[in-house]
Image 1 (tube, helix red, strand yellow):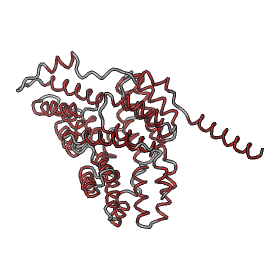
Image 2: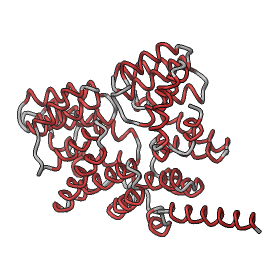
Image 3: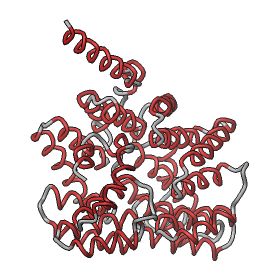
Image 4: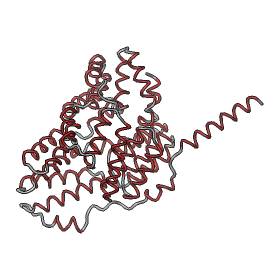
Length: 424
C-alpha cells in the first residue's frame, strides 16, 4: 500500500507538471497551417517591372521592384529574390542623383541579409558621404557595426540617435541591452517599441515587434508570453514562417512534443524554402531517434546551401554540418576561419574554437575562448562550446562554472543539449 501511494503521488506530480508546462493549443494555430502559397507577383509589381528596359533609367521602378523582391524573399525563403533585389538596388545606386543615400542604405540592408557585412559597411559609408537621412544612416551604421563585432563604434552610433520616443532607437537599444546581457532592460525597450508600433497601426513594425519580443520572452523563460506574441504575429500575417517556427520550437523544446513540432514545420516547408527549417527538422528527428528522417532533412539543407546565391550566409552552421554530419573537420575549420574574417564576433570565434577542438588543436581553441569569447557574450550556444573547450583542456572548474549557467538555458539550446551539458 505504501509503494502504491508513492507511485500514485509521483504520477500525479508528473501529470501536474505536464499540464502546467503546456502553453500551446493547436486550435490557436491550425488555421494558419493551411494557407495558400505566397504570391510572387502582383499588379503593382508588374506595373513597375514593365517600366524597366535593358538600359532603363527608371529610378523609381528599380526601388519599387527591389522592395517587392524583398517581400517575396521573406514570404518564400527563396534566395533568388534577394539576389534580384540586389541587382535592382545596385542599378538604382548607379543612376540616382536624388536620394542616393536612401538607395545606398537599402543596398546595405540587402547585403546584411546576405551576411555580406563588409560590403554593407561600405554602402553605409557611401550613404554617409552622400548626405541626407543622417539619422537613418547612423541607425544603419549601428546595425552594421554590431554585425561586425565593432561594439564601441556601435555604441557611438546608438548614442547619436538616442530618442526614447523613436521606434528605431528603442529596438536598437533593446539589441544593445541584449548584447550586454541585460535581458530585463532588453524586454522593457522592446515592449515600448511594440507600443509605438501598435499606436502607429503599422503592420510591418507590429509584425517585427511581435516576433522579436516573443524571442526575448522565450530567452527569459516567459514561454506563455512568447507563444501569445507568435500567435499575434500570425493573426497579422498568416504566412509568417518565422512565427510558425517559433511556435514549433516551443512545442519541441518546452513541451517535448516532437511530432507536433514537425507537423507545424511541415506546413512551413511546403512553401518556404529557408535552409534553417530543414536543420531544425533534422534536430527534431535526431531527438526522436529517426535517423532516416534526420538524413532526409540534412540532405535537403545541404542541397539548398550549395546554391551559389547563398554565398557565405551559412558558413557558421556549415561548420557544424561539415564536422558532425560529413566528418570533414578540416573543411569545417576552413569555413570557421572564413566566418571570423567576414564577421569577427564572439559567435564566429565560437565556431572557430569548436572547429579547432575537432581538429585536435585544443590549445588554440582555448586561446580563442579566453581572448574572444569569455566575458564577451551571454549566448548559451557559444558558452556551451566554450565549456567543451575548457573540458578538453582539463580546465574543469571553468567548465563547471559555465555548466551552472547553461542548466538554465536548456529551452534555448534544445532538448538534445541536456546530455551535452550533463557531460561537462
